[in-house]
Length: 69
Image (cartoon, rainbow, N blue to C red; front, side, top):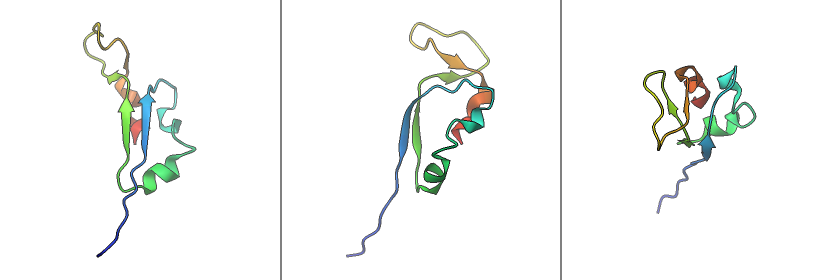
């Protein structure tokens, strides 16, 4: 039987709202980038259109999206 491994880290409850969004994971970036698959749970919508509704009351400017990569 051939054994292999898969690295699958995850981060959750992400709310990015900072001047330099790309720095949000700077401490753990090497671990996240070395994984086979990385996932996150975004707690807000990234949009500059529309208005928040009762269910999604938090949203962030799309310029924060680079922080997710």
